Amino acid sequence: MHVSGCSEPPVIYEDPIQRVRVAFVGELELVEPCGEDSPVAEVVRKGGGLYHVCYEVDNLESAIERARAERCLLISEPQPAVAFAGRRIAFLMTPKYLLVEYVEAA
Image 1 (cartoon, one colour):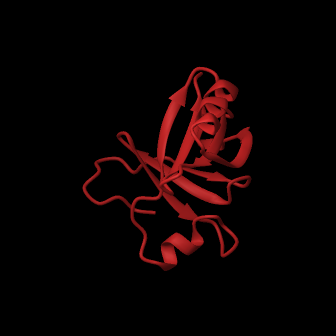
Image 2: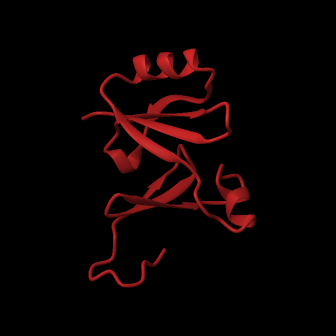
């Protein structure tokens, strides 16, 4: 993963649970599949682009509960994420098919 125009290369995190490599450039998270079984492999095959939005939340379970009340579907249960120093993340799909990631606050 190379980011053109950056003075220092970003730190690349490999997450075996999510099966991705991620790097942060400012507030932007770049995501790359670690193999064909990665959840983002199909996105890359289709040409890439915006994959998801991420929100930091104080209470992960409460945020999931509120989202589910708004008809969002829980895609992945809370689990630790390497790129967020082990803080838990969860993914939900909105009724308009936008993938949303919640990351619990430190």
